[in-house]
Length: 189
Ligand SMILES: [Zn+2]
Ligand SMILES: [Zn+2]
Image 1 (cartoon, helix red, strand yellow):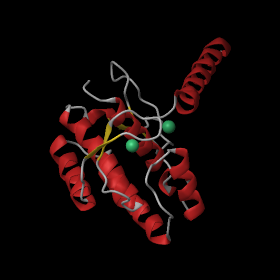
Image 2 (cartoon, protein in one colour):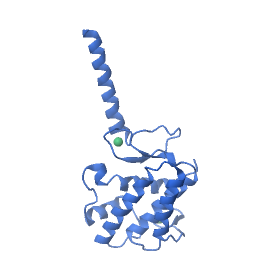
Image 3 (cartoon, helix red, strand yellow):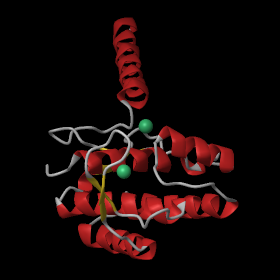
């Protein structure tokens, strides 16, 4: 798969962002500027000045639009959504090196607000996934009661659950208990 390290990093920010949504968690994980600021620091998002209520609203709106890409049925459909997100962001690719990072491209305009910044970076990461013919790696968790998304970067595209330690594991336990119950039913019959 032709996905660069930078794209992988952007995809992990994308997944983190999408999984903060109220439809995923039951409650809003980005309810205020303090939570948004914690997200920016956790993901080491560069060139972000102080955050405002506008930023919060823009990021929440963007999150919904990005999530829609994970529910698409074709690359055409996904491309339309991603193109619109990137176009609205107004990208200005720049070659930069900063902090401990080697040379890489920033797609966001210098000191863009967080919404357009994320729209440019995460939109371009999705562009690269689609260009590589890998839309199907953008997945929603296979556990019936889980609304989290993930990007399956496994070699054989076999990942079905958002996090094998929680959803995958929980389903294994449920399947094991079901087998046990039917074995007991057979034994007592
Ligand atoms: Zn950078
Ligand atoms: Zn899950």
